[in-house]
Length: 169
Image (cartoon, rainbow, N blue to C red; front, side, top):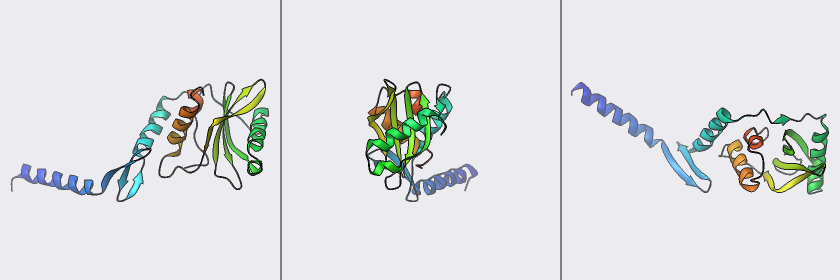
């Protein structure tokens, strides 16, 4: 067999073997790449990578536990849907202007990401700006960012872009 024919056959065989392990799975949230039956969120990975390269977090500030707004945000979450919300613990809190985005952990509820803003000196939870649950097999950050952006279009894009989940993976 001639060398170029052998290389062509080898390349074609390698491609066919690789493709036999891969397939696209259409789902409600988009497509997942199945590698030997294990779902991988390639679109989420691309969105996350693109977001990290393009975002500007200079206007976003992390709130420490000693910050008054941190305490107000925790109080707002605990008061939102008692009694289950009383066990709320903030894992992360970020602020951009009057907007605050917090990641919350509970004793008996799934982890949540809550969007709120200061109105007349008080923090108010945006009722449509609450995400809760698991994201597997989807990458958490792009899924939650896009959900919150759709639900609360007036939220600052830089605050959502700088969100990096601590609890949900």
